[in-house]
Length: 400
Ligand code: AMP
Ligand code: MG
Image (cartoon, rainbow, N blue to C red; front, side, top):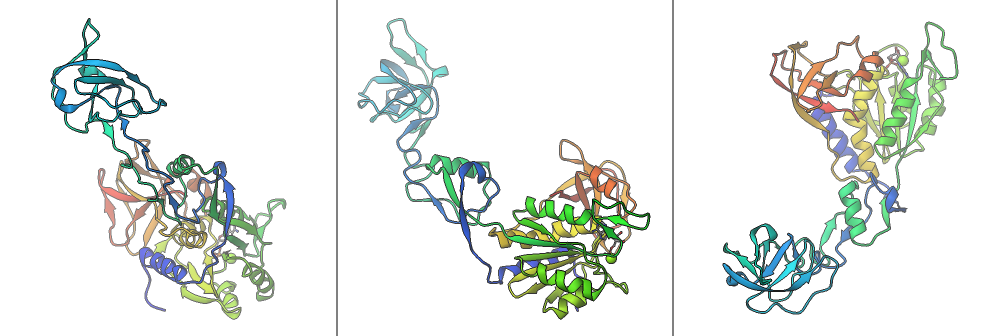
């Protein structure tokens, strides 16, 4: 194994490794109203010119630009939704509404605010006009046949608008990858069990299932596995029948951390087993034929952060996204902050509603679910910087 990997390097390994796998490319058709967040399976092209004819960008008067300054005869009006009128003659103006077709011959629109209506019904325009002003030319937004959205795009509201614009009430999207989730640990109990003081409820499986669904996958929660090879083998085997497997717990260096040797025994090939981050240092990433496999450390803070940094990218690629993006932005500290050098730390923090000012949330370490729940972001304290003063900037990771 090489030395400790930086998180960006580890993430790059995940992305390059998963990109190189022969991934299934299945698709299904969903109605447009259920397409938000899905991954487009085919390119979307323009079915006609957009706009289909010259349209006015303002309420005003369509004119010949060389007729102004001057006094023009008003030929009538054209509204949005009306068909094209007869060509505009020299010395004429046509009152026009935003979105209405510009008549043939007209080559400029003057805003209504810059037009004086005379008592005899004519209009006086005092300023010069530029040829083409406030006219949206035919095909200027997208000519017929041009690419509007490439396949492998995750559909957002603007894409839904593009699909509606081109007449699609249904759309072909990639099928959701199926992700198996396996929590391990002798101390972990189900939610319907009353935990003894030395036991812990299984929060990770449910947290991971929610993260998987929010990242485009379907989640199957397997029964909790005890910390023995015999307990692990059948559940890991079951997990490896899905498109991707995420195991929580049992990947540290303890005597009962048997997840990695057992996965190896089943044929999983590991690409890294340690990352220079906290929480989440013992994160392991491997592949089993064309399936990504993650062993995430079991403390919920570690599981949450390492899912976001690493597993989410693999799942997004599996789901058909071309370029998974880590949602990092930058903010400035409202109070001084320091940490120990050596590891890049992802710590719960609160970003102000203007998206700029940051406060660290005190926490007891990676088991502290209440602190995770108070956070709206994670600050990213680089491994090679110790102190930040008020006003210093730092990167933050948005919560998935
Ligand atoms: P491990 O990674 O197995 O060493 O687990 C580290 C700690 O994470 C354990 O001591 C538990 O307190 C906690 N933990 C492990 N699995 C879960 C889980 N499924 N849900 C909640 N906490 C867990
Ligand atoms: Mg354990």
